[in-house]
Amino acid sequence: MAAPFKLVSRLALVTGGGSGIGRAVCQRFAKDGASVVVADISEDSASETLRTLSHDQQGQEHAALCVDVSSRQSVEQLITLIQRQYFRPPCVCVSSAGITLDEFLLKLEEEAFDRVLRVNLKGSFLLTQAVSKALVASGSSKGVIINVGSIVGKVGNLGQANYAASKAGVEGLTKSAAKELGRFGIRCNTVLPGFIATPMTAKVPEKVLDKFEGMVPLGRLGEPADVADVCSFLASDESRYITGASIEVTGGLFMG
Ligand code: NAD
Image (cartoon, rainbow, N blue to C red; front, side, top):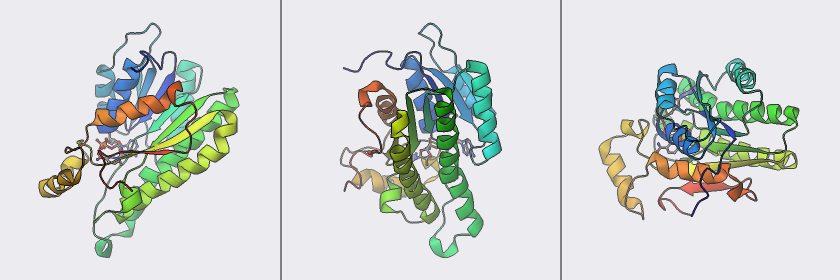
């Protein structure tokens, strides 16, 4: 049985918090007792998530802020705003902001390649760097970085050369960060979702989703909460000896 309120008094930042997996992570962290900063490029979606967050613990204070994770200036501004509001940097950071721009390799435009890399990979880099810099500067002895990769980064996917490359990059980035930041008490891990029912996968043709669903040993597509529960474990002290790991949340799809 998981400890109740296992993130009490933690400050958590979740990018892509306005939708899908990021929203479920915000909701789970709030239930775990954390104060949550919901960050998204869409201010309206971030505010919508904010309205759904529970406040069962004394001192829990949530916020919704706008960020474009692909811009260094925007990410730095976000961290500055958080430190001004909470007088400390976030000790948990989940990078869930992500996009797809699917096209077969033979037709893939350079701009679609660059945009997906800018948001998914560079965005994770900018957040990982900005949060760990702020944690080290604050003298904190504990931090958690969770980057959302994808099982597609390991196995590739038709029409997703840009996306698969970005997610493979996220795993390499996170493992390198884990090696460098362990001595500062900062743990860095990647979660690798399979097919999860969110607005992102709503764009995938039904017949493709049905095909993948048929291949999942657990017999269903994932729910955002399936991924959020793993993030909750990775954010908590229950995973205190785990860093540099990539945890598949796929229902067994494409297991190695
Ligand atoms: P989603 O589209 O529901 O949510 C993504 C969120 O990211 C949106 O709220 C969007 O506004 C935000 N966003 C996009 N660009 C941004 C930017 N530049 N700056 C800040 N925010 C930005 O998608 P999701 O399914 O919840 O995906 C969340 C993460 O999980 C993504 O990184 C995605 O690649 C990854 N993932 C999803 C699945 C899946 O099956 N849904 C599988 C594997 C990995």
